[in-house]
Length: 165
Image (cartoon, rainbow, N blue to C red; front, side, top):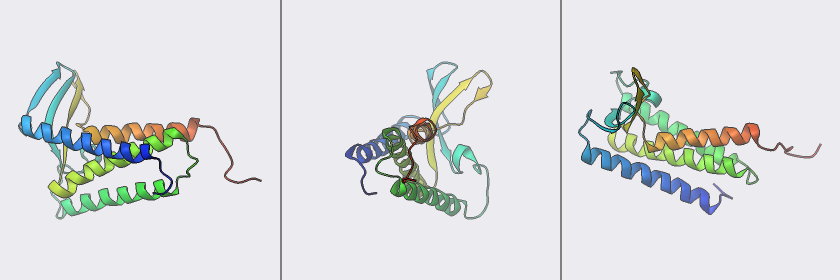
C-alpha cells in the first residue's frame, strides 16, 4: 500500500498484537464457555469460539467444508480491504487513514485465528437484563471503530472534486 504513513502501519501492527495477546490471555485464564464477571450484570469475559462468520452467522451450521468456506470468505474480505486501501488517495483524510488501519489490523487479527485454529476467539460479553450483544474481541472492536472513522470522513469530511471541471 504505497504512500501510507508510518502511523498507518504501526496502528495495524498494534491492533494485531493487542488482539492476539488478549486472546492468548483469555485462553490461558478462562475455560471454554466459562465467564468471569468484570462489571456485574453488564460485562463479562466469556471464552467462546466463533466458527461462523461475523456476528456468529453460520456458527451452528454443520455444512461440509465450513472451515474452508469461512476462511476463504475472510481472506476475500481482507483482499477487498487491501484493494480499497491501495485505491485510497494519499490525500485522504486522517480519519480515513486511521479507520482503515484499524479495519486492516482487526481483519488480520481475526484471519490469523481462522487460519490457525479454524475459528475466531471471542470473549467480550456485553449484556443488560435479558439483552445480549454478540460476543466480540479486540479485532472486532477495531473493525467497528475503524468503519465509523471511514464513514464519518466520507460523509462529514470536506468535499473536493477529484479533478478540475
